[in-house]
Length: 200
Ligand SMILES: [Zn+2]
Image (cartoon, rainbow, N blue to C red; front, side, top):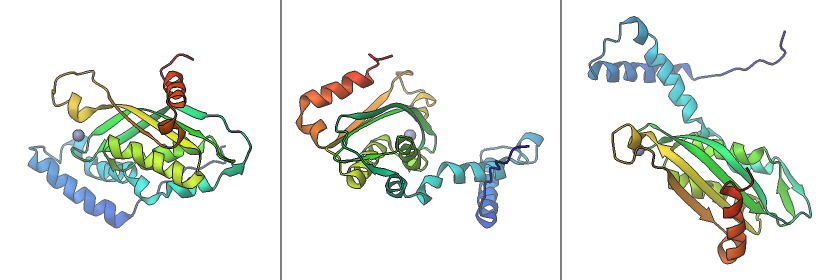
């Protein structure tokens, strides 16, 4: 028997209200909300949407602050290929891809697992890729005060792909830098080389 128990808690009042609205939406879309497959859909969507936006209730800076260590290491720390799943705030459909995040410590490092969690906390909200990129950068810069932060996100947007806009395989790339990544072309180049897959 496992001693680990995952619990998910949803506000029943919010879930109920949301479900009523989704029922209405489905009906307006011409669906029969009484058919078997859709019977529980409004409630499932209500819960799914609450989960997919629960990053609003997380303080990513606090996540970082909970695992900061003094350390003399002053070379680039890079976490690449962090999976990103977010919702486009213009169409409420997903965009997804990879984030690559680097920083150059200034006497302080952060537990490596915290960086993907910061990416998650900002992703699990209604977003645009551009803002997601700068929010991750600013959070790390303001919390760790490193010599520089670099964030690159490559993502596919279902609102583009599914609505038949041309270039079905197009990927949107956004980037945001601070400190040495901005002022030192060599540092930025090293970062770009590292994330472009040469180590794979
Ligand atoms: Zn969109």
